[in-house]
Image 1 (tube, rainbow, N blue to C red):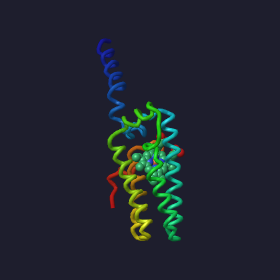
Image 2: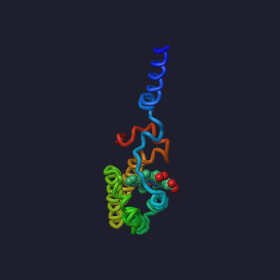
Image 3: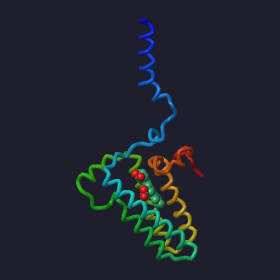
Length: 164
Ligand code: HEC
């Protein structure tokens, strides 16, 4: 009797504490949490949709050598990002607590958008093409690490280790 009780407790303990750690990672477990407040997350998502529009515009402008269009879109992406916007104090606090790696991805993205704008101003098709491709890489790098819940197809990708 006693042994069985002990066994039951042990099994329960294993179920409660050990099993969740040993199981393959749940989708959300493998994604570092950004802990954004709902209103900041909404702002952020709206900004992301703008970024997508920007990349679509640039993809359409490059084959027709619309350098001004590319420079404008790239600078808009460079400037109008949520991390640079006017935010409430609470939202700003929210942003400050974001992981350093996330901020590094953000910075790399900005840096690339600026280089792309410069290449467009120089009417350098090859450089535009190069920086545009790297700009997309910078979306992917951040998404593969921080947006796996939103974009589950990144889960099997091995994150940012995928390099060319
Ligand atoms: C620094 C990190 C980071 C970078 C750089 C980044 N994203 Fe995102 N993006 C995210 C995260 C995190 C989400 C998921 C947000 C959520 O759902 O809470 C997201 C979501 C999105 C969404 C979905 C928005 C929605 O409506 O829910 C789109 C579209 C998007 N990103 C496009 C882009 C494009 C295009 C680029 C590059 C030009 C880019 N992102 C660069 C982090 C990033």
